[in-house]
Image (cartoon, rainbow, N blue to C red):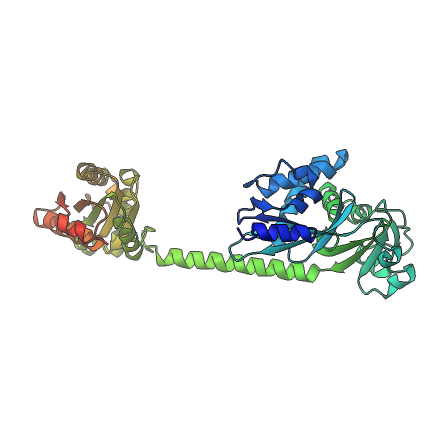
Length: 434
């Protein structure tokens, strides 16, 4: 817990509401002033409550009936403010104007604080006066003034330019969402935009963004007074958004390129199977686990003779067919099937007995015997394989497992080829795992 009970009480003395959330955005602790500002939470908030549930309670209380269909959008925008807030913003709640700030800890938890900054009885009207109408033209960005019903009472020329408003169009008395709807007229539905605008109008100092046709964007920041008047400053952020989109696109392209490079570095170009490098990495990782692990090394018999008699093109086709068969139904439960080099393939299977692993090896030999070898070359009668199999209980020494499977393969070659030989990993090899 970042905020101690002593600090909670200290914030109470300062009339600052505090609520702490963990890295998963769940409530951890809060003080009495928090409940004073948000009485709807009293008796309902609890340690571990997701912030999204707190927001749902907050909006259920304050939204008008016609806005309730958009509550999920408001909640999502509230979560975005919670996760990304770097500056204070202000809003009205229960007759109080509150300034909300947020501090994020390195561990990912967040402390939110609320301070009452003014009420209708505490603020001198002169201190809350918005810029005079004649001053609007000196503001370089777009600016508009709204009355207590969120209707425009004045705007400068920059505002008109930002929203493509004709010089002869009367906008006094319109709402901002009507201005945006006019921009989109005949282009797209704006129901979602209207909800975002209505929500954004409520929070002083919390920028919100408006999309316009043609992939144009505006950022809007509000300032309210206790008299109900509001000043909104509008900035064109189209270039920044396009640059952001370009950066994101470049980042995604780089990630895709890196993923493709990793895939290429781990894939055999001829067969499309994993290559030896990927197989050895997987073997080392799986051998360290507490599990039974079986390794099959499959070698095509007399492959040099096939190459010499039918040519390298037929030899490559033969290897691709062998790869397809080994990686097919016989090894559907395998962790990995790879080409280890030349005419040699590896199969790694977890949680099988030696007899079950031998059954996989037999299935490979049977499938190869049924393969349409004449499709490779009309004179090719078939191709057989020798298989060396080793099985052991993990954690294992991966090198020892591989060496034993390789030894079993050579035994199969010595004993006539087209057969399976099995070696169980010695207990001493298991003990060296680590």
